[in-house]
Image (tube, rainbow, N blue to C red; front, side, top):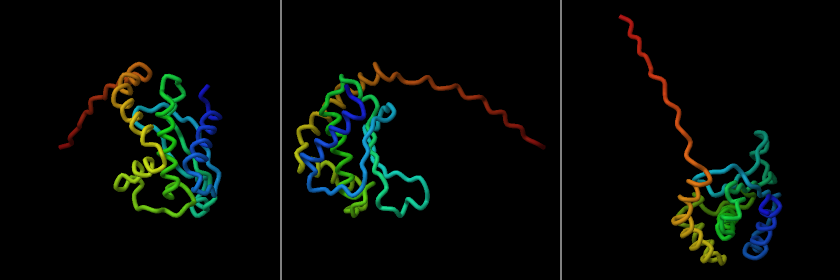
Amino acid sequence: MRDDTWLFQKLDEIWDGHFSDIPQHNDVIIKFGRKARQRLGSIKQETKSIRDLANKNRKTIITINGLFKDPNVPEYVITATIAHEMCHYAHGFSSPLDQRFENPHQGGIVTKEMKVRGFAKALQLQKKWLKEVWPRYLEENMPARQTRQRRKRIVIRWI
C-alpha cells in the first residue's frame, strides 16, 4: 500500500543508492499531499516564524502528488519525482546545504543531475507516461471542476 511510510522507504532507498554523497544536515520529511493536475512534487523548508528563516536546521518537506497513492501510477513516475526533488536538495534549494545555482532549474541542471545519478531510464519512462497516459488518467480520476458563473457587474455612473 502506498502511504507516507512507503514514501519514506522509497526516499531512503533513493538517498542511500544514488545520493549517498549528499549529507543530511536536517530532518527531511516526505509525504503525500493534495491531488494536483500539474505539480508532481515540491520541496520546501518548514517555517513557523520569522526566526526560522535564519535557522539552517529547520525541516525540509518533500510533498508528492496525492494521485500517486494510486497503484495504477507506475512506480518509476514516483521514483523520478522523488529524485527530482532530491536534486533540488543536493543543489541547496530548501536544504541547509550551500546553494550551488541561482535558479533551481537553471540550464536543465536537474535533468543533468538525474542522469548522472542513474535516473536516465526512469526519467525517460516518466516523460513518456506523462505524455501518453497522464491526460487520460486525469480525466478519469480528477475531472475538471465546473466553473462558477460570474455575476454581471453593474456600473453606476454619477453625473
